Amino acid sequence: MSTRTRTILIIAGALVISIVSRFFLYTGPPHVEVAAEVIFDGIPGFPITNSFVVTIIVDILLIALAFAATRNLQMVPRGLQNVMEFALDALYNLFRNMNAKYVATAFPLVATIFLFVLLGNWFGLLPGVGSIGVCHEKKDMHGVVEQRLALIGPANVLAAESEEVHDTCAAQGKKLVPLFRAPAADLNFTFAIAAISFVFIEYWGFRALGPGYLKKFFNLNGIMSFVGIIEFISELVKPFALAFRLFGNIFAGEVLLVVMAFLLPLLLPLPFYGFEVFVGFIQAVIFALLTYAFLNIAVTGHDEEHAH
Image (cartoon, rainbow, N blue to C red; front, top):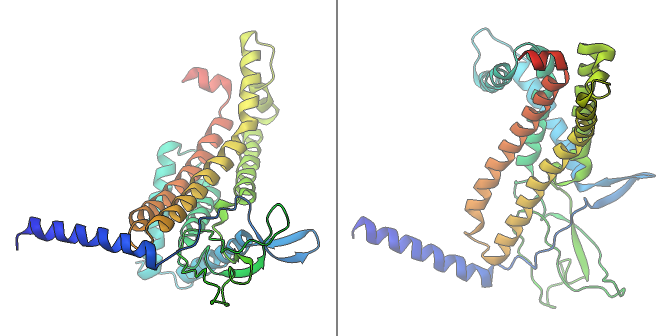
């Protein structure tokens, strides 16, 4: 059998398996929730959501990773220490190439943001995230309980809609509320990270330029006074741009995987899954790079800009 024939047979077999899986591996109707869902009520006024649970897990994992990588430091790094030093050194050089003057000061924050967002994005792609949860009552706009299973997140769910099955949420007239959700798929998380970046940027702007930092936005230098107002508006927009960019990309990726799993559950989601692994990494890099770029803009006065 020639290589070409073997390739054609493999592709044809994969297509057949994918199509057949649509009938035997039913994932339930696609159901998307924009807002993070409440798992249980914690402190009054502070409900615990599925994205908050993953945020805490990611925090613990990062702390454990830092401890494991630094508990036995060696002059010639090996194992996990070697991996972390290589990754952080590459990240440090990336920021140093942008502006070496403030990289030592800003690196702890931007590196933490990168690792936090990256681990959160990749954790959201693990099997079970979006598919393992608890059953909650589900009602439509008329107060009638809907007899179907809610599928939220990128992972596949084997759901039976038969009345003979009594151990599924659908059979109980309820919806599945996942226990886990990618943090960046929740606007609360992305706005919190963006707010931290914004406060850090403004702090270093005032620290570097003093009260003169405000002259970038408010002055009486003819046309520059109008330009300053525009810059002030753009400064206020920065946290919103950071938050919505990260949320939009991660949330759209989840929706894409859900739809692909609904159409052909077995093989079709695989290339998109690999693509989302890449997107999760790129979005973490972009968020960190934009934070550092905005910091460089903040610490640069108009006189320095004109000099360059």
